[in-house]
Structure formats: structure tokens, C-alpha cells
Image (cartoon, rainbow, N blue to C red; front, side, top):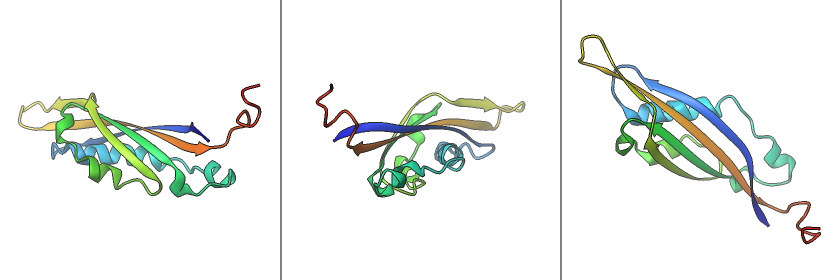
Length: 122
């Protein structure tokens, strides 16, 4: 069995007034996921719960992201969530509020037999 990447999904999310990095991150992941249906996993004969999903969230303040809340968005499989420096903070004209923009990348992996597994790489 080999770990194979099946899909990469990208999204963006914002929190316009609350300066909540987790809320923006959750919205970014939902944006990435809710435009897709990974029908390939069951088509290959695997359970959707066999998916391994690695999520990377880019925000200006990565320490403020609740990784467990972001992972809870995922409907299937096991996950890891990592917040990194990125995204944008946009200060309003009055200087008293910040819009938070988060970017998300979800990469879906599956442990599976491959066509070259039986051939020994030949």
C-alpha cells in the first residue's frame, strides 16, 4: 500500500468585523470543501473514512486559530490542521477594526494499492 494524493482543494474565508482568526479559517476550509464531492474514494472501493486530510491555514496570526474547530469542519476521514503565517489583516479607515482573511489548502490522501505495486516498479 502506498499513500497517494488524490486531491488538493483551496479556499478563502473572512471575518469582516470580529477579528476572529478561527472563524475566518473555518470559512476558508468550508469554501474549499463545499465546491467538491470526492466521489473517487468510494469509486475506488474505499470508505470515505479512510481519507487522510492535511489542512494548512494561512492567517496573519496563526497562534489565534483553534485547529480542533477547523478540523471539525471535515465530514470524513482523519485530519491534521496546521496554521501558518499568511492571509491578510486589513485595517479599516478609522483604524479601530480589522478584517481577517484566511487561506486554506486541504490535501486528501489515501493509503491504496497502486497499479505498479504488483509489478515491483517495472
